[in-house]
Image (cartoon, rainbow, N blue to C red; front, side, top):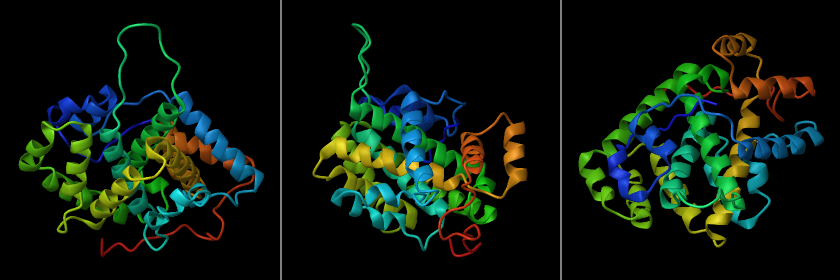
Length: 284
């Protein structure tokens, strides 16, 4: 699965946050090469697949089905605004996921035998990988999504431009020497500024809420893993055969495999979606 990150920080700005090497590469180099699909990602997608196939596709949603299963999740439903494009939702949740990862970096153990990943670590791995894959789809393969291609590309460029400005050298200096908790707060402050794009402000608000959930880190990553697993399945149904064939020619896409699987079991569209949603090409 390909990975991309919209946050364009330089690695040294977060050298004291002990971020995982894969995230450091993404922060310093806008797009990374392919990575092997982790078993944690497969497990979360399979669980979501079982749910939606059992209901003949009724469980497909922009992440809202799993969020509605708990009070904590319901408090985040505003960030799945159905009146906005799918690309908006992906970018808001992607940036919020990345901010939360800065607060809860993976810790590397250099000595001793390998440890079995904890449930929190497994959910975090699934959420962060699917988050970066979602960002990659908006950036590089908008034709496989549900919004107008040109609109999605324009949205991505505008959010990226504002992101760079918000996290300019002056702002980065304020983050580079901070520990994870303080750095997380500084990111929310910088990205949530009034002059920023609505996607950045919504992402900062969402990251703040995720960090304040009563269940702590465990609840946050469980909700994020559930959201992203549902979102990737929601994106899969498509009538864009040409786009998926081109993706196969490029070496294949995870979303194409899911599209083929859902088609095989008879799920060819989303509930209540007779046609793919198209966001306006203007007014981003």
